[in-house]
Amino acid sequence: MADTLARSRHDVGNDRLLMLLRNMLTQRAVDTRGFQLNRQGKIAIAMGSEGHEAVQAGTGAAFVRGKDLLYPYYRNTGLILACGFPLDDVFRSQFARATDRTGGRNIINHITAREMGIASISSIIAAQCTHAVGAAYALRLRKDTGRAVFCQFGDGATSEGEWHEAMNFAAVHRLPVVFICENNRWAISTPQSKQMVNKDIAAKAVGYGMHGVIVDGFDPVAVYSTVHEARERAAVGGGPTLVEAKCYRFLSHTTDDDDRTYRTREEVEAQRKLDPVPRFEERLVAEGVISEAELTALRVAITELVNAATDKIELEPSPEAGDLYSNVYADTYSPWL
Ligand SMILES: Cc1ncc(C[n+]2csc(CCOP(=O)(O)OP(=O)(O)O)c2C)c(N)n1
Ligand SMILES: [Mg+2]
Image (tube, rainbow, N blue to C red; front, side, top):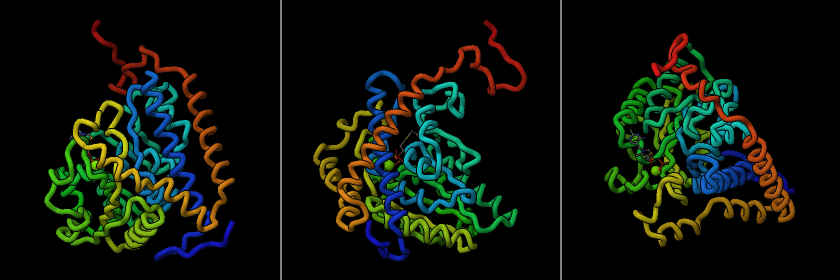
């Protein structure tokens, strides 16, 4: 392994580069497995994040465990893994097992891990933005400094009223929030051009009086540096930042969607050529951070990890039917019939 390499505005050592790579490869392997399990009829639905690996690995590397709070959205499997969420629990959610943190009740990818600072999310697009800002306001009221709130969302979320309210409130109160838009250009079948006239979502930050920055969402080091800088500023009272990470969604929105009905194969193939995963692998090999043999061994190790987790969690029990009303109503409840 080569010496530590200096990177853009922050020094990023080899350990962190390898951590980014490991996370990106794990995301890809988990995504692939989710789509396979769905086709096998073993899980109800899968939501891929292929094309978002660099955004999520870079953001996760900037998240300070034990201090920061994360308000994720449904496409954030890679990010929660990067923040310390266990792989087994990802599969417990996918298989909807009784052992899942929500008892197998929540739709997949809607995870929660209070002890890790990962908030429970709702499926309502942009709802997590007002929640994130509320948490940041609580930190402010408690004079709890040195911490930041990460708020993730897609390009489509920026059309929601709640998104604008969250942005404005955070700017007015200079709250410790980093808003991270994973701009993959599509909100299911709606292209960015049908959501807004602006080319750049980050430009909207000006209207609220906050920092706005565009970053190459296919470059994990650039994302890490940008989010890290925004996080550090937020944590010392420097106010919120809107980071726009430009990326792409390579797969369908979910396994229930067929993207061939609304976008051309040419467009998808052109973006595939920019795939952040092989490009980062090549970069680290070229820079001597990892050898070809070490890379192959890492890929094998990750596949084995994902295989072992899949096999183990598949055997865990499903929720009992009689458990249906637990944690839904106060006290005991049973249906009329
Ligand atoms: C308020 C609301 N409207 C519509 C939906 C249905 N819906 C689920 S995901 C989605 C697309 C969101 O796109 P984007 O924010 O760009 O995120 P991406 O899936 O592309 O990562 C929509 C419209 C919803 N869940 N909530
Ligand atoms: Mg989108």
